[in-house]
Length: 211
Image (cartoon, rainbow, N blue to C red; front, side, top):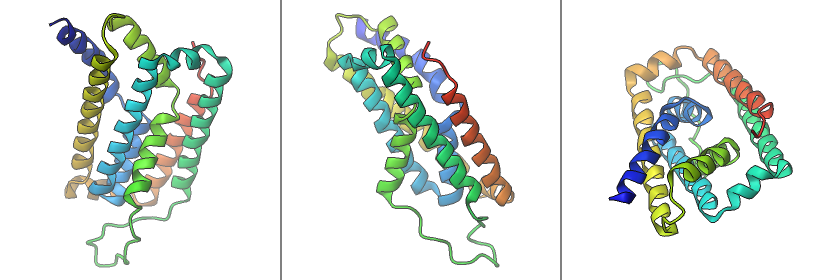
């Protein structure tokens, strides 16, 4: 029962992070509206795999090294910021997209490959240094030192599954025809708004301190 209570404590805090809008959420929403449900769901699995990556090195103790090293933390921070700005720039330069069922719609471009979508989701989350501090503090505060690494790994798997399920739900909602039509009616403005938000998140990340 100790492990059950420990896991429930982790999930209570983690659930707040899951539903908080951020770069991952924006990415899944954009993938849903621009490329459709399948693309967004594959991207969600990439984000979930990245979460396992963060939890994995936290369990191994590598997270402490990264968090304590200003150089490593700064390197990860600037890489993540540059990547978010890159996503924003691509969004700003993207052409207007149209609903595929409109009479004037041209033949839509082929959606990105599953591997590319998976890596996009993985990189967006993996290059964010905030999970380094979040999971390090979370596991330090709520997980006992006596809890075996295998049990902690199970915690991580369940947390990743929860995150994936959340983003699958987000993908499903934003690909409902009526919801998608409302957002796509913005056309080029949607690209501009998401581009500005990505760049803003990148700038915010770049100016964030390790402590």
